[in-house]
Length: 200
Image 1 (cartoon, helix red, strand yellow):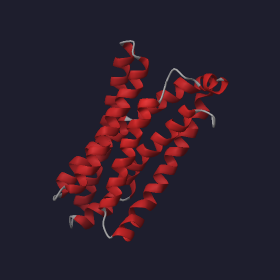
Image 2: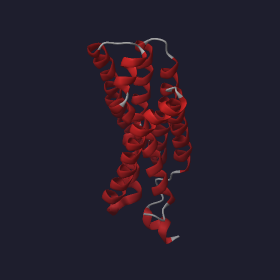
Image 3: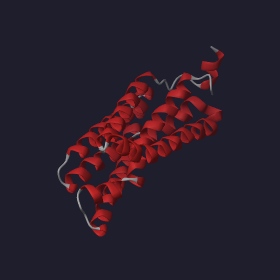
Image 4: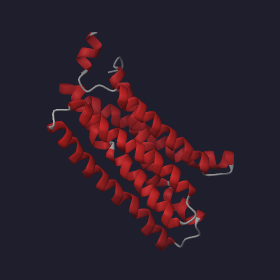
């Protein structure tokens, strides 16, 4: 796996996906509460919205993958949903940071998580494509990289804020990672399994 460019790209893009998603699990609640002076109950309601968006995003991506795959476009069925998802994630995090109201910020961050969760189905499908009989090891390795992305998020938000005095840099970093993941998906090839890559 270590010699496979596909594997490294799959790991990196999943790192980027989790970097955005884990913010909703870790720092979104205190960020909304402090930034918009909300009470705990209101903040809790607002914080739940992105997860609903994420659930819908996962379903939409799955349906889109099936439809494109049945049309005979194997690679596109992985690539297009992932690229759309990362595009929405990048736009969502940037726009949420610019909103003057909590409702606006949450609405845009829900778009971001909708997009981030759109990348899950193509990512795991891609692991099956390139891993074949080793799909479990490939998907587990990719998931490990995603967990590292979650860890980095939990540290990056407070440290960047302490370093710069603003929450803005974190959102730009998250958007940048999503754009980078889009570039990676243009290079990832479902028809290049690990055996073929390592053999060549």
